[in-house]
Image (cartoon, rainbow, N blue to C red; front, side, top):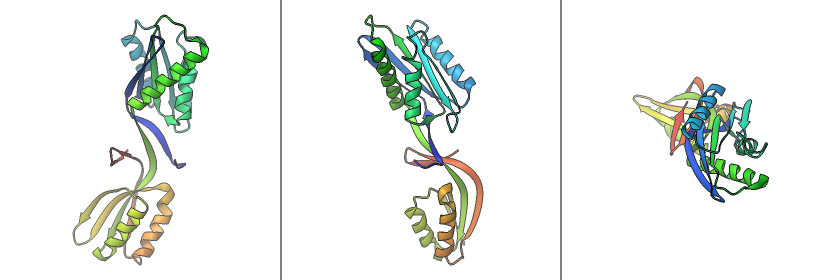
Length: 217
């Protein structure tokens, strides 16, 4: 993963595990603020009001600027922090998770609890859609038909996401260029078309591939 990309939860998900008759339900949700995270955690607690515990963790920000976790009555350090550690270890951002436990009558011990809560978060993440967002800049490449083949070769070679192509008396290729490739790609296009292609740069944007399609945010 490049320095200008990061993973986020795109679609919520859930998972479930059973450990010694205790039932653990994990709910994973994309969040972008502490308020959103608190609302999500509160909603899960309300839904599973009869559970033994509703432990939670969330991380917000490109650099995990805001993190919180709660053991919700489990022994200190056996639930919330291990759950948060999974998110941080997987380097997943802007994500909240609640693991609901229905006690099955058998104590799991400190190590058993840590493993169960971490395994639950992993199950929840497996049920969610996690994507890798990249930083890029919108670019329109205006070329004549003679330069089209060369530009198509350059974009394919670098796996540049092409969003659309317009064919009139000239060709306009709408693309999003990863920031780390911006200068090198511009130079390659200019050299490859002997300066005949026009590069029209647009806004910076985040983009990700979701189900084999490029989405710009």
